[in-house]
Length: 528
Image (cartoon, rainbow, N blue to C red; front, side, top):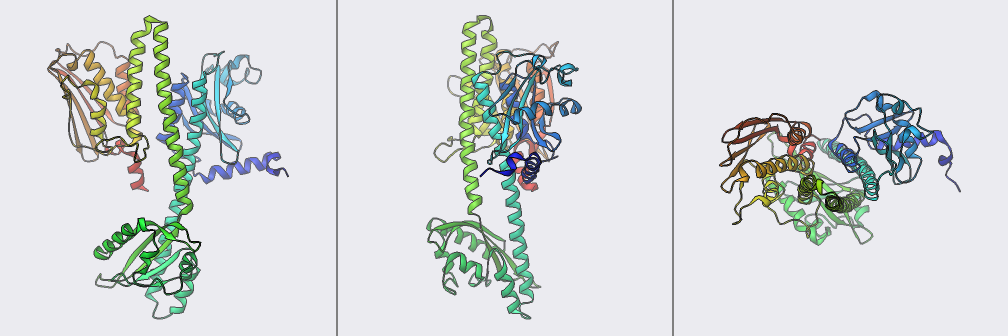
C-alpha cells in the first residue's frame, strides 16, 4: 500500500510544516551552532556564501546565512527546492548555462551567482525539510571534490541532529513543567487532605506520573496507583525505606545520598536512577520532591513524583553516538585538508609559505577540536578540565623552550569554556602566537608573552603582552589578513572589543568579551 501523503503536494507541505513546528525553529533568532555549520560548509567548499534554508509553505526561511541582502536570498528558494527534490548533493556547475536558472534574478542580477551546491535536510521519515547550500560567483565546471561532497553530506546530517536536539530539549521542558505541575497539585491537595482524603487519592491515581509522599524524617508512607502499576510491587511493600531496594544497585547509593541531603537541608530533591519495572528489567526515571512547610518554615511533609524518562535517555544516547561520529569525521577532514595542502605545496613550490601557514592554522583548529569534542571516559584527554586556561596551555605547547618551560605564561582568573567558543579563541591566540614567533617576543630566545585574564563583572578581559623581544617600530602601515582574523574572532564571533597597542617594548592586545561568550551553552541552560 502506498502512502497517500507521498502523492499529495498539499499533504506533503502540511506534514513539512508540522515537522518544522515540532522543532520550535521557525522565525527564531540566529544561533551559533547553525552559523558554525554554515560557515564550515562555505569554508570547506571554498565558497563565499553559505546558507541553511528551510521550506515553509510558499516561502524559504533561512536559519543561517552569510551577511547578504535578505531580499536577494529570498529568491534563492528556486535553487534550494531543486536540491530538496534530489538525493545526495545537487550541483549547478554554471547557472548561466543551465536552462533552469539562466534567467533567474540571482544569476542575471547584481549577485551574478554561477555555482550552487546543496545537500537536502532529510528527517527520519525521509521528508525533505530544506537544504544546506553554498553559492559561488564563479562557474565551477569540475564541481566539488569527493571530500567536499562528503563534508556537505555530513554537515547536512549535523543540521538535522541540531534540529532533533531542539525537539528533545523542548520535550524535556514540557516534561519538567508537567512534573512541576504534578508536585504543585499534590501540595495543594495535601492542604485540604483533612477535608477529603478520598479526593486526594482519586487525583493522585489519575496522574500519569508516579506520585509518592514522605514524612519529614524520610519515611515513605504513600504511593499512587501508577507507582504500583509501573513497579509491579505489592501494595504497601515499599513503605518506609524499602523503596531504595527497588533501584538499580549501581544507582542506589547516589539516590540515597541525594535524598539524605534534601532531608538535611530542606532543598528540593532531584535525581535520575533506574527503577525496577514490572517486567523485571530496570527503566530510567526522574524522581523529584518538594518539601511542604508550615507557617514557621518547618518541613511537615515531602511530596514527590517519578517520571518515566527511558525514551529521553535513548534519544540522548543516540545523539551522543552521532556527536562522536561527527567529531571523528571532522577530525578526518582536518587531516585530509592538511594532506592536500602538503601535496599542493610540493606541486607548486612558490606556494610553500602559504601552505605552511594554512596547515599550521588547521593544526591549531584540530587541537582545539580534540580538546572540546565529546569524549567517552576512555578517550577523554588527560587535562585538568575543560577550562580556558587548560585550553590555552595546550594550544601554546609548541612554543615552549627546549627545557619545556612555557614561553607564553597564562595567569589570572580562569573561566568555564565550551566548544562553541573554541574556534574563535583558538584562531585569536594562534594568530598572536604565530606573529610573535615571526616578528615579536617569541622570535628572540629570551622573549616571553604574559597572557593575563581577569573577570570584571559580566565581562572577561584577556591581555596579551609581549616583552624582551625586538623593539616595535609602531603600528603597521596597512592591516593584513592577521588583523582581520583577530577582529573576526573577537568582535564577530565572541561579540567583544579588540584593542591593539604597538608599544616599543612589545605588542599589547586586549580582548574584552562578555563572560558568557566563553561558555554559551551553560549560559543558555541557566536562562532556560
